[in-house]
Image (tube, rainbow, N blue to C red; front, side, top):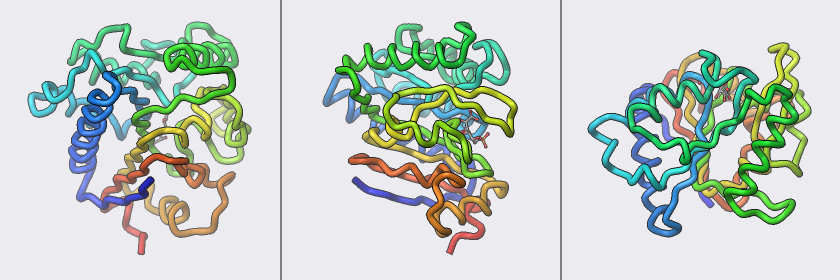
Length: 246
Ligand code: 6PG
């Protein structure tokens, strides 16, 4: 297990470093298990990473047919909504690389009820990883972003899902958004072999200092709960977001 912080010049450098790490981790997983399981992050930061993976520089560096994509969280919107994390990945990564539908495991938000969507997603992960009851998946890689309130995935400050430990994926009521969100639990996140945070922009600078150098208050700063049990954690941070770090 290792914890590493890389301060990089800008989002472009974060995306380049993340692409190289994803390919390296992915090829190592494929050589070991003949497959690579990766949970993508939502929001806008990872968009440039997704685009980069589909460019000439990276698109032939891994056997995409052996890469299986999941999502660490999702909004309760349909997959064709501009708010959908699935849609962001589909447009910037899956379509350009012609990823087969069988390699993509999205939250089936068309089910409607958030709890039922989360149960369905947990069941599909349990089946894919051939888990026994109560066991958790070990993703080869989970990508995460961080909000300016310290949330990660859809684990927002002072929300119930932060404290749920016995489920793989849950619905989470987020009052500040007046919305139901869908998210991995920290148990699932911390069971990964590799976790990479992508953190870019001055809007994250204050909360990032609190998360990394402030008091331990994981209910108010959920990103502080990301502590892989056995895996590696790398935070890719640009200079703007790192402004207040010592
Ligand atoms: C989501 C994300 C969320 C995101 C952060 C950062 O569904 O919004 O999963 O956790 O990673 O809010 O978002 P940005 O990258 O857009 O700043």
